[in-house]
Amino acid sequence: MIDWNTTYAAIWRQRQAYLRPVTQTDPIRLEQLLGIESQKQQLIANTERFLAGLPANNALLWGARGTGKSSLVKALLNTFKDRGLRIVEVDKHDLLYLPEIVDDIREHPQRFIIYCDDLSFDAGDSLYKPLKSVLEGSIELPPDNVLFYATSNRRHLLPEQMRDNLDTRLVDGEVHYSDTVEEKISLSDRFGLRLAFYPQPTQTYLDIVDSYFADFNGDRSALHKAALDFAHLHASKNGRTAKQFFNAYGTADYPDTGDQ
Image (cartoon, rainbow, N blue to C red; front, side):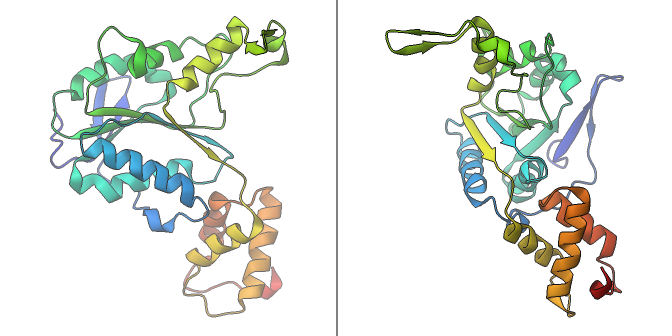
Protein backbone atom coordinates (compact mmCIF):
# COMPACT_ATOMS: atom_id res chain seq x y z
CA MET A 1 0.00 0.00 0.00
CA ILE A 2 1.41 3.39 -1.02
CA ASP A 3 1.62 6.17 1.53
CA TRP A 4 0.54 9.10 -0.63
CA ASN A 5 1.56 11.54 2.09
CA THR A 6 5.20 10.85 1.32
CA THR A 7 4.97 9.43 -2.22
CA TYR A 8 4.35 11.95 -5.00
CA ALA A 9 4.29 9.71 -8.06
CA ALA A 10 3.82 6.09 -9.03
CA ILE A 11 3.99 3.96 -12.16
CA TRP A 12 1.63 1.10 -12.97
CA ARG A 13 3.48 -2.18 -13.45
CA GLN A 14 1.41 -4.67 -15.42
CA ARG A 15 3.17 -7.92 -14.53
CA GLN A 16 2.70 -7.50 -10.80
CA ALA A 17 -0.49 -5.46 -11.29
CA TYR A 18 0.50 -2.83 -8.77
CA LEU A 19 1.52 0.81 -8.47
CA ARG A 20 5.27 1.16 -7.94
CA PRO A 21 6.26 4.29 -5.99
CA VAL A 22 8.68 6.61 -7.78
CA THR A 23 11.55 7.60 -5.52
CA GLN A 24 13.41 9.87 -7.94
CA THR A 25 11.30 12.23 -10.02
CA ASP A 26 12.50 14.48 -12.82
CA PRO A 27 13.45 17.82 -11.17
CA ILE A 28 12.35 19.95 -14.15
CA ARG A 29 10.75 23.28 -13.15
CA LEU A 30 8.12 25.33 -14.95
CA GLU A 31 10.44 28.32 -15.32
CA GLN A 32 12.90 26.16 -17.29
CA LEU A 33 10.37 25.54 -20.06
CA LEU A 34 10.76 28.21 -22.73
CA GLY A 35 8.70 29.02 -25.81
CA ILE A 36 5.45 27.45 -24.56
CA GLU A 37 4.18 30.20 -22.28
CA SER A 38 0.55 30.10 -23.44
CA GLN A 39 0.29 26.31 -23.11
CA LYS A 40 2.02 26.49 -19.73
CA GLN A 41 -0.37 29.07 -18.32
CA GLN A 42 -3.47 27.24 -19.53
CA LEU A 43 -2.36 23.94 -18.01
CA ILE A 44 -1.35 25.63 -14.74
CA ALA A 45 -4.76 27.32 -14.50
CA ASN A 46 -6.56 24.03 -15.14
CA THR A 47 -4.45 22.24 -12.54
CA GLU A 48 -4.98 24.96 -9.96
CA ARG A 49 -8.75 24.67 -10.44
CA PHE A 50 -8.43 20.93 -9.93
CA LEU A 51 -6.43 21.38 -6.71
CA ALA A 52 -8.98 23.89 -5.44
CA GLY A 53 -11.78 21.37 -5.87
CA LEU A 54 -13.31 23.29 -8.78
CA PRO A 55 -14.41 21.73 -12.08
CA ALA A 56 -11.39 21.07 -14.31
CA ASN A 57 -10.77 19.36 -17.63
CA ASN A 58 -8.85 16.32 -18.75
CA ALA A 59 -5.98 17.59 -20.89
CA LEU A 60 -4.44 16.48 -24.18
CA LEU A 61 -1.08 18.00 -25.06
CA TRP A 62 -0.49 17.27 -28.73
CA GLY A 63 1.91 18.37 -31.43
CA ALA A 64 5.53 18.42 -32.51
CA ARG A 65 7.98 16.12 -30.79
CA GLY A 66 10.49 17.47 -28.31
CA THR A 67 8.59 20.69 -27.59
CA GLY A 68 8.10 20.20 -23.85
CA LYS A 69 4.78 18.35 -23.60
CA SER A 70 5.89 15.66 -21.15
CA SER A 71 8.27 18.02 -19.35
CA LEU A 72 5.35 20.35 -18.66
CA VAL A 73 3.40 17.61 -16.90
CA LYS A 74 6.46 16.62 -14.84
CA ALA A 75 7.06 20.25 -13.89
CA LEU A 76 3.50 20.53 -12.60
CA LEU A 77 4.26 17.82 -10.05
CA ASN A 78 7.31 19.68 -8.75
CA THR A 79 5.30 22.88 -8.46
CA PHE A 80 2.15 21.51 -6.83
CA LYS A 81 3.17 18.37 -4.93
CA ASP A 82 3.12 20.27 -1.63
CA ARG A 83 -0.50 21.19 -2.36
CA GLY A 84 -1.51 17.55 -2.69
CA LEU A 85 -0.92 16.88 -6.39
CA ARG A 86 0.12 13.33 -7.24
CA ILE A 87 0.81 11.65 -10.60
CA VAL A 88 0.19 8.08 -11.66
CA GLU A 89 1.89 7.17 -14.94
CA VAL A 90 0.23 4.52 -17.09
CA ASP A 91 1.52 3.07 -20.36
CA LYS A 92 -0.83 2.97 -23.31
CA HIS A 93 -0.90 -0.82 -23.24
CA ASP A 94 -2.07 -0.76 -19.62
CA LEU A 95 -5.10 1.43 -20.21
CA LEU A 96 -7.35 -1.58 -19.77
CA TYR A 97 -6.41 -1.44 -16.08
CA LEU A 98 -7.62 2.15 -15.71
CA PRO A 99 -10.81 1.24 -13.82
CA GLU A 100 -8.77 -0.69 -11.24
CA ILE A 101 -6.24 2.13 -10.93
CA VAL A 102 -8.98 4.71 -10.44
CA ASP A 103 -10.65 2.52 -7.82
CA ASP A 104 -7.34 2.31 -5.96
CA ILE A 105 -6.95 6.10 -5.62
CA ARG A 106 -10.49 7.47 -5.56
CA GLU A 107 -10.82 7.47 -1.75
CA HIS A 108 -7.56 9.28 -1.01
CA PRO A 109 -7.55 12.98 -0.08
CA GLN A 110 -4.82 13.86 -2.59
CA ARG A 111 -5.58 15.01 -6.15
CA PHE A 112 -4.34 12.61 -8.83
CA ILE A 113 -3.38 13.13 -12.45
CA ILE A 114 -3.28 9.89 -14.38
CA TYR A 115 -0.63 10.55 -17.01
CA CYS A 116 -0.01 8.73 -20.28
CA ASP A 117 2.93 9.81 -22.41
CA ASP A 118 3.03 9.49 -26.21
CA LEU A 119 -0.55 8.31 -26.44
CA SER A 120 -1.82 7.15 -29.83
CA PHE A 121 -3.64 4.19 -31.26
CA ASP A 122 -3.25 2.10 -34.38
CA ALA A 123 -6.06 1.24 -36.77
CA GLY A 124 -8.18 -1.50 -35.26
CA ASP A 125 -6.76 -0.86 -31.79
CA SER A 126 -9.41 -1.22 -29.07
CA LEU A 127 -7.30 -0.05 -26.13
CA TYR A 128 -8.85 3.39 -26.31
CA LYS A 129 -12.27 2.12 -25.21
CA PRO A 130 -11.42 1.83 -21.47
CA LEU A 131 -10.00 5.35 -21.71
CA LYS A 132 -13.24 6.72 -23.18
CA SER A 133 -15.18 5.09 -20.38
CA VAL A 134 -12.98 6.52 -17.63
CA LEU A 135 -12.93 9.99 -19.19
CA GLU A 136 -16.68 10.37 -19.52
CA GLY A 137 -18.68 7.47 -20.79
CA SER A 138 -19.30 5.15 -17.82
CA ILE A 139 -22.47 4.87 -15.78
CA GLU A 140 -20.28 5.85 -12.79
CA LEU A 141 -19.00 9.41 -12.69
CA PRO A 142 -15.22 9.83 -12.53
CA PRO A 143 -14.05 10.65 -9.00
CA ASP A 144 -13.53 14.32 -8.18
CA ASN A 145 -9.89 13.73 -7.26
CA VAL A 146 -8.78 12.24 -10.61
CA LEU A 147 -7.94 13.86 -13.96
CA PHE A 148 -6.32 12.37 -17.05
CA TYR A 149 -3.45 14.19 -18.81
CA ALA A 150 -1.96 12.75 -22.00
CA THR A 151 0.69 13.76 -24.52
CA SER A 152 0.59 12.75 -28.16
CA ASN A 153 1.94 13.62 -31.57
CA ARG A 154 -1.59 13.19 -32.96
CA ARG A 155 -4.43 15.62 -32.50
CA HIS A 156 -7.13 12.94 -32.62
CA LEU A 157 -5.00 10.10 -31.17
CA LEU A 158 -6.19 7.66 -33.84
CA PRO A 159 -4.66 7.40 -37.34
CA GLU A 160 -6.41 9.56 -39.94
CA GLN A 161 -6.65 8.34 -43.51
CA MET A 162 -8.10 9.90 -46.63
CA ARG A 163 -10.63 7.12 -47.12
CA ASP A 164 -12.20 7.91 -43.76
CA ASN A 165 -13.54 11.13 -45.25
CA LEU A 166 -15.21 9.58 -48.29
CA ASP A 167 -18.55 9.21 -46.53
CA THR A 168 -18.52 12.73 -45.09
CA ARG A 169 -21.53 14.70 -46.40
CA LEU A 170 -22.70 18.29 -46.54
CA VAL A 171 -26.34 18.56 -45.43
CA ASP A 172 -28.09 21.96 -45.37
CA GLY A 173 -24.75 23.68 -45.19
CA GLU A 174 -23.53 21.57 -42.26
CA VAL A 175 -20.74 18.99 -42.38
CA HIS A 176 -21.80 15.50 -41.32
CA TYR A 177 -18.73 13.37 -40.72
CA SER A 178 -18.58 9.69 -41.53
CA ASP A 179 -18.99 7.23 -38.65
CA THR A 180 -15.26 6.49 -38.79
CA VAL A 181 -14.30 10.14 -38.47
CA GLU A 182 -16.86 10.68 -35.70
CA GLU A 183 -15.37 7.77 -33.76
CA LYS A 184 -11.88 9.24 -34.01
CA ILE A 185 -12.93 12.77 -33.10
CA SER A 186 -15.08 11.59 -30.19
CA LEU A 187 -12.03 10.36 -28.29
CA SER A 188 -10.12 13.66 -28.39
CA ASP A 189 -13.38 15.50 -27.67
CA ARG A 190 -13.38 13.96 -24.21
CA PHE A 191 -10.37 16.12 -23.37
CA GLY A 192 -11.84 19.48 -22.45
CA LEU A 193 -8.42 21.10 -22.65
CA ARG A 194 -6.47 20.48 -25.85
CA LEU A 195 -3.15 22.28 -26.14
CA ALA A 196 -1.21 22.41 -29.41
CA PHE A 197 2.60 22.43 -29.47
CA TYR A 198 4.21 23.61 -32.70
CA PRO A 199 7.78 23.36 -34.02
CA GLN A 200 9.92 25.95 -32.28
CA PRO A 201 11.71 28.72 -34.17
CA THR A 202 15.47 28.93 -34.25
CA GLN A 203 15.65 31.74 -31.69
CA THR A 204 13.61 29.76 -29.16
CA TYR A 205 15.96 26.81 -29.64
CA LEU A 206 18.97 29.06 -29.01
CA ASP A 207 17.27 30.58 -25.95
CA ILE A 208 16.86 27.07 -24.54
CA VAL A 209 20.51 26.32 -25.30
CA ASP A 210 21.50 29.51 -23.46
CA SER A 211 19.44 28.45 -20.44
CA TYR A 212 21.45 25.23 -20.23
CA PHE A 213 24.77 27.05 -20.77
CA ALA A 214 24.03 29.90 -18.36
CA ASP A 215 27.58 29.80 -16.93
CA PHE A 216 29.33 29.65 -20.30
CA ASN A 217 31.91 32.44 -20.54
CA GLY A 218 33.26 31.72 -24.01
CA ASP A 219 32.22 32.95 -27.43
CA ARG A 220 28.43 32.60 -27.35
CA SER A 221 28.15 33.07 -31.12
CA ALA A 222 30.40 30.08 -31.56
CA LEU A 223 28.34 28.17 -29.02
CA HIS A 224 25.19 28.96 -31.01
CA LYS A 225 26.83 27.79 -34.21
CA ALA A 226 27.82 24.53 -32.54
CA ALA A 227 24.26 24.12 -31.24
CA LEU A 228 22.79 24.74 -34.69
CA ASP A 229 25.20 22.28 -36.28
CA PHE A 230 24.12 19.72 -33.68
CA ALA A 231 20.45 20.45 -34.44
CA HIS A 232 20.99 20.07 -38.19
CA LEU A 233 22.71 16.75 -37.59
CA HIS A 234 19.67 15.56 -35.61
CA ALA A 235 17.16 17.20 -37.99
CA SER A 236 15.33 19.00 -35.18
CA LYS A 237 15.55 22.27 -33.27
CA ASN A 238 13.63 21.90 -30.04
CA GLY A 239 14.03 21.64 -26.28
CA ARG A 240 14.92 17.96 -26.42
CA THR A 241 17.73 18.60 -28.90
CA ALA A 242 19.00 21.49 -26.78
CA LYS A 243 19.22 19.21 -23.75
CA GLN A 244 20.99 16.54 -25.81
CA PHE A 245 23.47 19.17 -26.99
CA PHE A 246 24.11 20.13 -23.37
CA ASN A 247 24.49 16.47 -22.39
CA ALA A 248 27.11 16.09 -25.12
CA TYR A 249 29.09 19.27 -24.46
CA GLY A 250 27.95 20.94 -21.23
CA THR A 251 30.70 19.77 -18.90
CA ALA A 252 33.02 21.63 -16.59
CA ASP A 253 35.44 21.87 -19.50
CA TYR A 254 33.43 23.44 -22.30
CA PRO A 255 34.29 22.38 -25.85
CA ASP A 256 36.25 24.51 -28.21
CA THR A 257 33.09 25.69 -29.91
CA GLY A 258 35.09 27.41 -32.58
CA ASP A 259 35.96 23.99 -33.98
CA GLN A 260 32.36 22.74 -34.10
